[in-house]
Length: 480
Image 1 (spheres, helix red, strand yellow):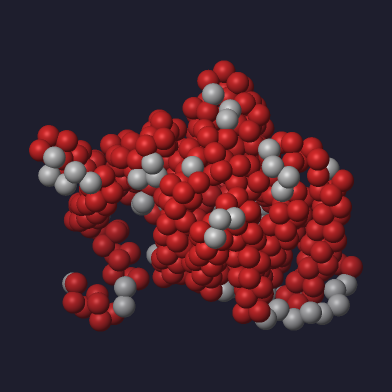
Image 2: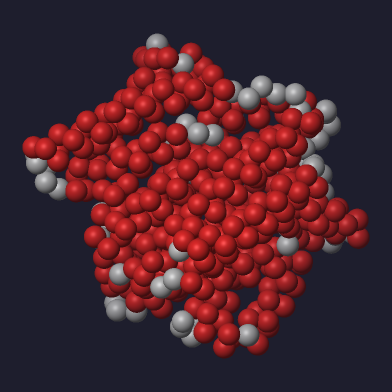
């Protein structure tokens, strides 16, 4: 896998950042309870949806046009001007609607919505600039720094007694600071753009804007709908389950982040078929972590949620459904990334429109009928629909082989992982050896992961080859 090293850097960086986020969420859950977490999630949901208007596909267009290698300074400057203008408009709209926003969230925090919106847009601009400059690994390294700064600031402010205010302020500080650092590291030049630079950004953004909606739909439409029907306590539990699920999506996201600029550059002056080997590699490993993660969640879901507090264990079913959803999402991301990278934002538009429509309608219907479990079911079903549609579109443009055999071997290894975890759980519940939930979960996760990778290494020549190709030469000599 030629992009393996970049994906690994991004993945390890995201894992490091997720650990900081896990510690912070655990502290907030135990210190403030599910209710405050639910309100915090509603604020972020509002920012996510409003933020769509601040991007309207511009960041995706900046990433695409800059990655092509020509007129990078002009495209950056044009995109920056557009982002500043849209932020100004949105800030005014939020100010005018401050009372309805406060009523929906349940707290008068519209000022924080504007502040976090600014920080989020700056961070998005930073990420698009780094990716467009083929500095995906730098973008990945900044992720744990941002998460750590955000988490430490939030924990410190909550410790001082600021509660929800501290969480919101810390979030804004983390995103704004690292967004500024990212732009500084990319060092983009400012150069007066011509009319055609805006036109080329618009030609891509007019389709790509729906990608922002699609990403927000996957991450936040369920929370937004839950805000209409259930209490903030259940929203807090749901947000914890969602955090755990998206943690498992980290590796798939890292792969898609690394593949976009590579496919874009490879196919800029060549046929779409040149993207086939990269796409096949990304699909081989999209479920590498999520497949055993789903098995482990089925077995240990309740124990994992108990780490946050006993009130969170009611989310066991929701957690399993959400992990299944992000597994499908991981494959969908590789396919959508490929469509965008070969300059077919019109097709990603169609996929995103289908996903958004089904996810929104299913959430409204199923949450109304079945409560918060309906939200998780809706997310999983819509992810499956989006994945199938994206697969059909890519198949029309690129002749590639879907890696059924590789995925099958991952399923076999995951079954062994599940057997180890189940056996360990049975021993603990029968003989009460540890009698400590966190220690038990950590032990069983480590044992299960070890069994999974050991079995996969033994039965998959492709996996062994990937490990060999992406490890340092001296380490490869020792292992092989």
